[in-house]
Length: 198
Image 1 (cartoon, rainbow, N blue to C red):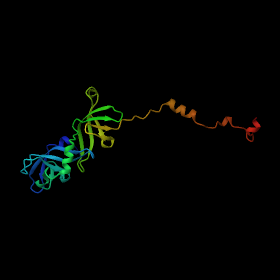
Image 2: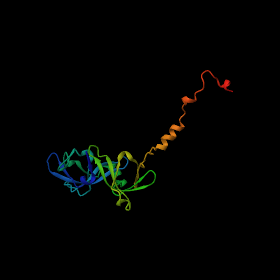
Image 3: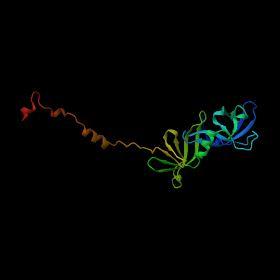
Image 4: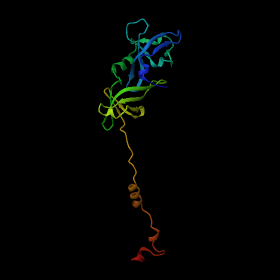
């Protein structure tokens, strides 16, 4: 199931054991090497700790109308003792307003939204808002995950669009003329060798 990050931020986190709301999803924590949301900050947690709390996306069992479902409030963790997650947090990577360019160096705009696949939390699509002057004539560009070539701290590079050359009638005629074919009206007489012709 695909969902916009805008719909996920602020969603309730519901305990499957008690049926009560134990937190809310806040900003995502994105692994730039895999372009995947690995965790969310958990806002308003009642875990009883003043430190920042997080919820791993692996601990989200499902999404339903009232929010993200987890086994229990114990799935909401403090950052203490989570060195691998802390390393990803230290990258400081965010997709909001990151610049998007194509492989030919043309600037396409900035990311305004992105779509997540909820089964694995991979980022599948980027919505790119074009540059100011181009935005009058263009709606948001949609970039698929497979088009992304490189992810850097300050920009994302995507494949440049390619437009196949249109085949014209003149091109067809040139192709026919350049073909090597035998004209049946100019066949050599049977039994006459090249030596006899001389």
